[in-house]
Length: 107
Image (tube, rainbow, N blue to C red; front, side):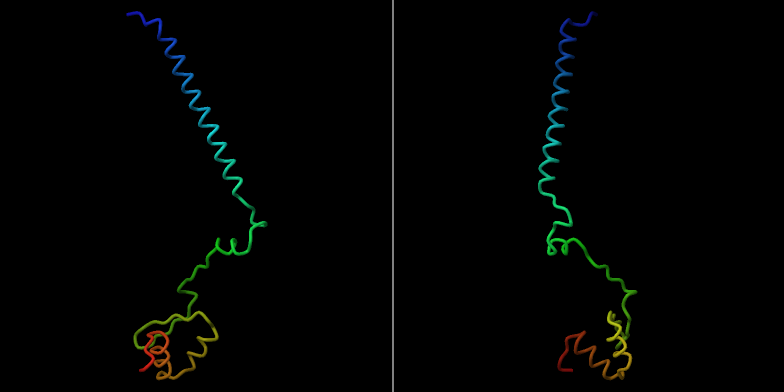
C-alpha cells in the first residue's frame, strides 16, 4: 500500500509544532530565570537580620556535661555551671533539680 500524499505534510506540521513547543519552553525558562534573578541579592548586600535567619547551630549530647540526679540525666552546656554543680552536696543538687528542671518550687 502506497503512503498517502498527505503524510509528508502531516510530518512537517508535527515537527513544526514540536519545534514551536520547545521554543516556547525555552522562552518560559529564561523568563523564569530572569524573574528569579531580580529577587536575588548577594550576601554582602543582605541585612544582618536576613543573614541571621539562614544558619543554625547543631547541639550534640557530647557537647554537654551530664549529671545524674535522682535517676535522671541532666545535660549542662556551661563549663562554669557544671563546675559549680560538681561542688554541690547531693541534697543541694537535688533541690536545684526539683526547682529548675522539674519546676517544683515548693519541694
